[in-house]
Structure formats: structure tokens, C-alpha cells
Image (cartoon, rainbow, N blue to C red):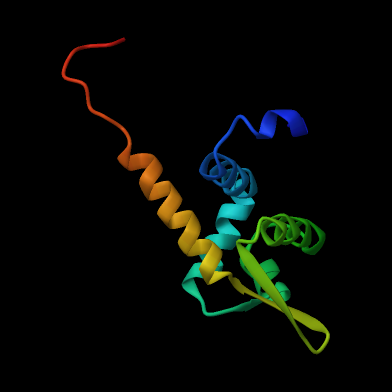
Length: 110
């Protein structure tokens, strides 16, 4: 997206798009579900749970981390990942507002 076009969108639209892009791969959804079900998870544990290689898991973790949805903390030679609660709350609130804006029409449209 060109820098000049960003001003045409609200902060809310930009954030929802950023989060949606980060979660737009089934492996990332699986990682998020795994992290949501546990307090934290070491990268090796994630690899053991999912049918993808360690390098692929690392790439997906990088995307989720760059979007701010997860945090990683070095624990010895491993990195322990967890949900970034403030960002997760923001995402939940933004998506809630997004889905609440739908108006059900009584007339047939399509």
C-alpha cells in the first residue's frame, strides 16, 4: 500500500487489515489457537503439535510477532511464545465493532 493511500483509511481499518493479514494462513491460525489454549509455548513444542517444519513454524511466528499478536521471550537456548494480551484485546474489540456494524436488511438484495 502506497504511503499516500494510507491517509484514506481509518486507524481502525488499518489495524484490522494488519491483524487479518497476520492471521491469514491456516498454520498461523493453528499457532494462535495453540497459544490461546496454553499459557505459553516454546517453539519446539509448537513444532511437535503442528505438521510443519521448524523453519516454517519460525517464519509464521515471525509474522505473528511483527503484527504484535504474540510475544517471544528468550528462555535459555529456546524462545517461549505467548499471546500479547493488549494487542489481542485490541483485535477482539476491533473485530467486535466491525461485525456489529452489519445491518440486516429485510428486503432481498441479491
